[in-house]
Length: 78
Image (cartoon, rainbow, N blue to C red; front, side):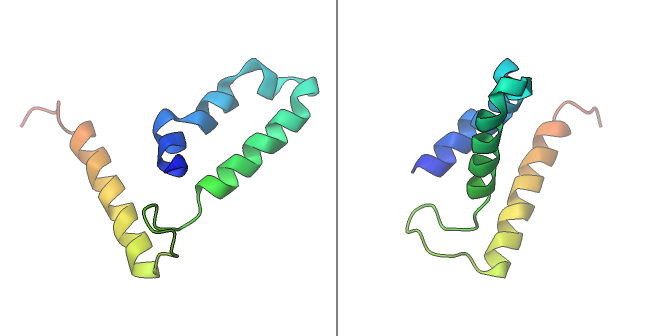
């Protein structure tokens, strides 16, 4: 439940844009953001917690790419 929520709210991106992330005193914060980014990319099923197969990971990638293309080309005149 938490992983899709964190991805949807773009927590990692917002942390990368924060002032603390760029400061020298924010080194620990930057390391924690790196850990969050690493664990956010785990290839697991968000509903049951099982590992995804290679085919499922590839299909998930294709689905995200297709969604992006639909949004990007929505305003392009034919």
